[in-house]
Length: 152
Image (cartoon, rainbow, N blue to C red; front, side, top):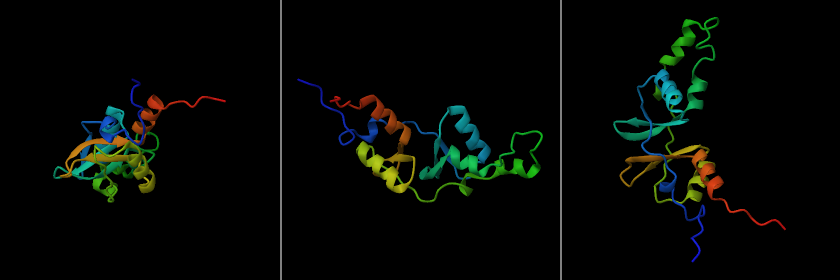
């Protein structure tokens, strides 16, 4: 009996989500976020407010908010260094888009495309954070499970 064919229509988010999730709080400094991304080699962190999912911050969000002169001894000024003291709540996206672990991979891909996001916090029926799925997770899954069509 052949093994069942895996597909984006039958695969579930729970199969590819990352857990535990790296998180930030609304009052964390951008320097904390920047350190979290660098230390853990990640691109997204879920922002919590009183243990509830509030939003997502990406490394690109932080990069846009921090002065490009930070860390350059010749060019950094006091006002540049102050950009690292901004708070996460100043840059977090306020429109939260989540997904459930039993949702299909194709629904995750479609939701990312229609909502213009590159990650989705995975939550249960109570809204508790279970994991995160990113566009990189989807690409990795496709690369691993894609069935090549025979060439004619």
